[in-house]
Length: 255
Ligand SMILES: NC(=O)c1ccc[n+]([C@@H]2O[C@H](COP(=O)([O-])OP(=O)(O)OC[C@H]3O[C@@H](n4cnc5c(N)ncnc54)[C@H](O)[C@@H]3O)[C@@H](O)[C@H]2O)c1
Image (cartoon, rainbow, N blue to C red; front, side):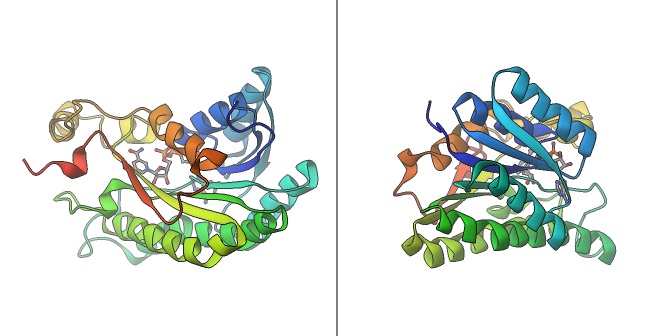
């Protein structure tokens, strides 16, 4: 077990990669504080973890609301006594986020509120607890789109994920000396429900994207979570301030 007894707070456990992370982290021996704004689905995900013999519980809340973010951390520390890992996975990619020239200001603000302000708030309340417990790891989910341009733009999402990488480096430098490492993960396109229902529901659109991936397929949630297990574990004790790409080679592909 690579995460035995580590207290890990994961945001966005109701769906996709967060759900897969809650399951795998518990299998690796972590005590999982699973959080999400979708209460019934998040609760169901954590029930699944417990049914498999895992240790964890669910806290409902919106990461972009300071009182909710503070409460998620407080409830985790109350139950398990400390926090070792903050896994900032929750993020949104609304379909009406397009180019700067045709994205509405409300959509832009919403994306930034969740993807960036939410991460800031979780770090604001989570990092002091990790320091108090003697150190640990912050894992911030960015995206491969922060590293390459795309002719089908999602400019609010893309730029918010670029900011996630910059924020992660700043946190790594500030809190590394206090024993808290911070790394960003840049997944390529992963088969999660939202992406499949929306962006990839059209076979031609799906094929266009798969053609760009040297591995010839989309990623699986578990393949991103595998890196997160490393980053949460003591195996990554000297990995700090990195932006690690897991994308089947898509960002390495010129033609
Ligand atoms: N799916 C992909 O291809 C892909 C690629 C690169 C990066 N990412 C990033 O990976 C992360 C997970 O993506 P996913 O595909 O699993 O998405 P998903 O939509 O399946 O899951 C995201 C979860 O976050 C939750 N959430 C959204 N807003 C929230 C809020 N304000 N407070 C609390 N929880 C909230 C949702 O309810 C949902 O359960 C996101 O940050 C996403 O941007 C996804």
